[in-house]
Length: 506
Image (cartoon, rainbow, N blue to C red; front, side, top):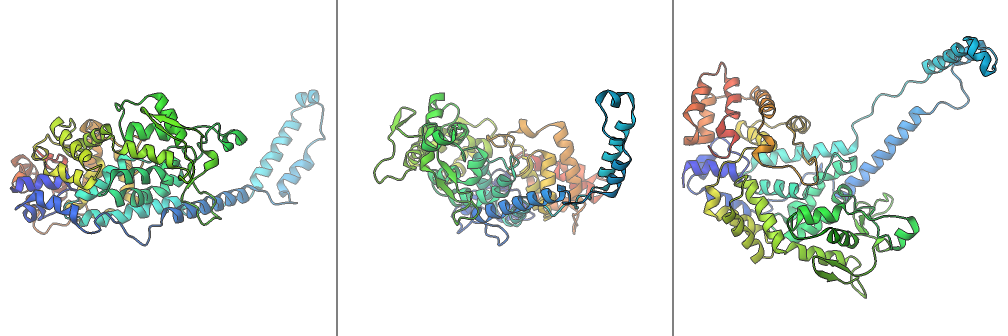
């Protein structure tokens, strides 16, 4: 292979080149990418600041209760007291009069207004805003913990896979505080352990995680004929079942019907998590049998008997997930999304077929699937891909060795439209050029590129870094543009906006 292919490997499959990376892997870029799949513990993310899902949930709930109580206390007037101004205003007001008299003489209305004004003026001021809520603290800690991992990755293929699968099983953390505080734990516990494991295990873990159960509203879904449904008049929610079929497994063209969505949602009734913070199980998955819709269910042509005897009570839903995980349409849906993410906005059918075949042959072994994508020669020859905002910022940090603190990083990504774990819908963020390549988007990128360039210190000048980053793939146009820059800062910003940087290949 060559330095050009090394640059492609780092941009197409990785998180972007750092100075010297191209020379380091130029002998065999493909082997360098594949080596990450065999690295020990490469998917794990351990940080003492990051709580488990149960610990995060309990901490967030305690914080919510405490803040709610503080607000009520701040809004509550002291018992047995009346502000002096209000008392004076009430004494000066005339006695109550009939409505007609009040209409003729305006003093009553003015006095009442004075009394109200006096009471408002004398009301105790609200206390200053307290510290940031716990869910946001956890959220920012989760972001901060990922920056060193992204900067240190040799290639970043596994981190890219983590991001891909987290977006595939997207949760919407801006929906409420609890989801925001649990989104990072969702990635660490439901996604990372299975990125190089079995798709079925990831599917089950994601489906059962509290963040997903909250995000897709399954926490309170009860069968209308279940004991809880009849007693409490609880209802069925189809959101989770629909998104599992449409987004997580067989895809919108997978041949299911609305009747299948309803049947599957009945199978998932009772799938919730323990929310009583006084119980040891708080924040863990729970199956509430008295919420579960009784009876056999039929999904996509197959009947799933109601659990009986010694079968686990949630066996019906698990059996359906097992079949969906190995369904041929799931293989094709997953393969299409992987190829679109890494190779081309219009996925080449031959690559999709090869990746889907590996998925089917291995029963959803995601390490084998990830290997098949890289080993396919056509994956190295596809059309170029435009950097998503998240990849743009990570690649910028890696290029100049400039870490961005979590709060600032979130702010920048919010400006760019791709805040972590906050997609506009359960579909997740799109990763095609049409979603991100726009005049406004480029203007925002340029402003951010300039702010990053302010922090760069050059030993040999920006042109030397450009050569180290892109080698012979650095175009003459980009080199001349940087040479004509008015300052090193401007040259550094222009490099971040160059075609070589913004696209996986030029």
